[in-house]
Length: 215
Image (spheres, rainbow, N blue to C red):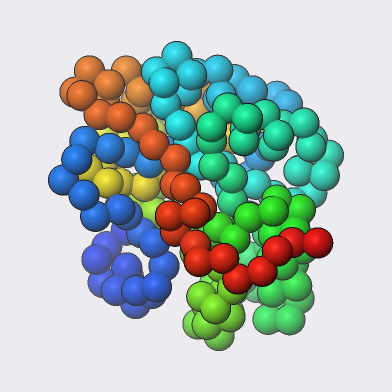
């Protein structure tokens, strides 16, 4: 079970996490989890470029090591990148030391202090550490593109019914989400562009106070 729109009471439970960007401007923040992979990430970049859109890609460290040219391409094309742990660990199911070491390993692979927990699942004790060392970016709209039990039309509806100014929307550039993403992403870009929205990346310099350099 998952929630398409993150309720306010959950957002208030973790006030130091970024759930959305407070603004009255017509701006949306598209984010993509789990890549980069050659089968899908280049297509996402090409599709975004058609609308002069920028996104934020929360990358799994082991995928970065396999495809270093892709993360370079993301940065060179004006997108932001963040850490999604090294092995996509579920914080609820992982001992703290193991989890936090994996997050740190992912941060060094991606070279970013932006972090999104895989599945959005972290223990309160893990959250305390993460808040000290990273800028944790969550979301207020979950597309559900990963869900095999919904149609691509339902996935599109999840986004269109819940997105507002400043929304952070989650998509996935992984093979499980590919069919829905290839349908939904162009439709979302077309719909909101026609309404005068722009699509911006979550810039690390604006969200993170520099704490250390990565070796």
